[in-house]
Length: 393
Image (cartoon, rainbow, N blue to C red; front, side, top):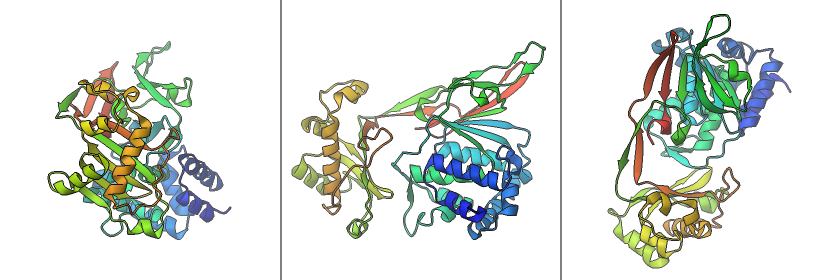
């Protein structure tokens, strides 16, 4: 396979593993060292003449020319470790690469499997277009569409990260920071990390900045969180297979219907199905994605929640949820909300190969009290930052 066809295959790839494999093959064919992050993009744009590649190079060069990047020298002396290959982790890695830093990203999974759909603000849509998303995903935000599945967004961002020289390692978990110390020769070693599996090649990687993008679980210490708790709110997300039939295409999305604005709709739903909701949203993307807030009494009456409990963590614990009845509940809500016009509602599968439906606590919101810390040990400084759900759920 020649270089142009290999790039086309890379552009079309839709799995995390396949994208990395094809990029490695492309670099090998073109005699580009993928670990020479400062020169990966420079070499690619001089040897790849595919029209799609040339259009991408033009967009990325225009972005890199912005004065904030100082010709990619603003952070050329920094090494950065990013934890997590979610949208925020990948976008942070891309930004660091544009600033000229040496960037390594680690992700504990080896696949992208999050079907849930993100609503995008206009400035985010423009940012992604400026990075070249339409080259890889031509259907992105056509017309009035303003959303994308998390998985599709990750697929795009990981390709841009690789092209810009970001080193990506999957199936590796960040465990803890290793503080600087003097070695046997009296030389102070810099900041490192402990990973699982142990003895990974990155165990010797010394970095100056650490970005946490590993979601709510946030493995970093030193970022205390405050909880904002409101009245009980139980959220349900559900993803159904999109077979892309004409009948499915005709079904209108629901950008957001709330009880206080359309009481009759929700009263009719309750009377017809016994399902009592506060609101519901429906987006059509790679899947038919629904998110809704359900009232506790309705969930108890339908047998979705087995036993009532004042403690929300116990109320929504897996042992207190009837998964089969949860599936029925969400499917009936989706069917009613779309007027029965989505034929054959079949659940998409999640990363556990189970029906992609989940129930969770919307009641509380956790927000970090700070986003950046600068710490120093043995005259070695480390800039730490958290982004995404690690910063604000």
